[in-house]
Length: 319
Ligand code: SER
Image 1 (cartoon, protein in one colour):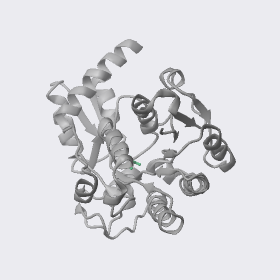
Image 2 (spheres, protein in one colour):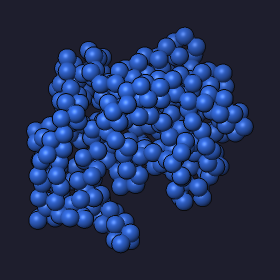
Image 3 (spheres, protein in one colour):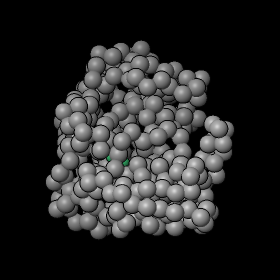
């Protein structure tokens, strides 16, 4: 029987991943671990919630021991734009928090899922069809912690036999919990503003291509990798995965197919533009496809249709 702990369970990915895991393994089998943000009613009512700060390793170990956890999805992390504002804090959470989780996993023989990111690459990485194994010299604190995290996960597997696995997520788009300060957040905000105001001012320039993914595919990636036959995994950690690839103009066009009067203006934010410019345009995710059958379900139009439908209803209810 699976017993899962999700850290960062009140965050953008964690909140939806926890619900998906509860549907799959049973509500009581999946412990939502959050630090300070209050859990939503859905999270609170569908299974256990525990206040865990991954910087407090004895708190993490306590939950793992108490519930007999065998798998940890470690989602607690600081995103790229916030990390540039407070690099020391990002280092602490993304590195020391991860190391704590890996040590607990080692002691209690847990498998661990750890997301990396397109942010683990830098300006010297080949930007188009970025290979699985390539140059990684990121120029952001977020990226530095992600590369170190990838290596740390590999190390805990080879040195201590911890079953670590992970993907490099692109920007994640969802209609549930908002993202917490990333460079790719525009691709979420744009849907809210399109519905509320019919217009959006984008902080990334036209022509800034980045890989993106709709939340159901992000969840599918995590769960299918964790359930994959380990004998088939050559890489284990940091698999390139992608689903969508667009710049702000292409995204705006897909919204205009539903809201023809939608307009977009640009007011470029230097910090986030610099970050985005240092990331690849488009990843090659063939290793994930070959080793564990990765295949996304949503294209841009399917995602836009669903995002606008669900968010329209949600925002109407909030009025
Ligand atoms: N969405 C993340 C960010 O923008 C990238 O992994 O920080």
